[in-house]
Length: 84
Image (cartoon, rainbow, N blue to C red):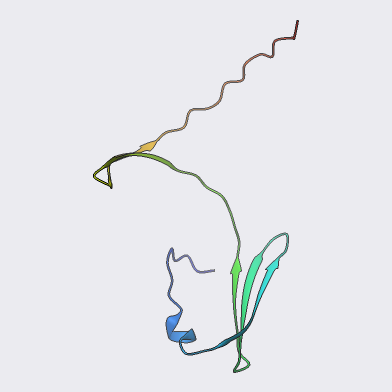
């Protein structure tokens, strides 16, 4: 698996004509397969995971400024009060 955050596959795929596109969505992997008219395939396999990061920014004249990362606080469970 590539660890690149951004990748460019133009060198390998430029000029090819797509004949068919397949999407497989099984339990562990997601796969996008491109079938080309020259009888070649290109497939992308995705292992999806979630992560979060919150950031607060001010918008001054349409541009974000003074951005800072928000640190989450753990939730404290409140006791459940019986309905009377």
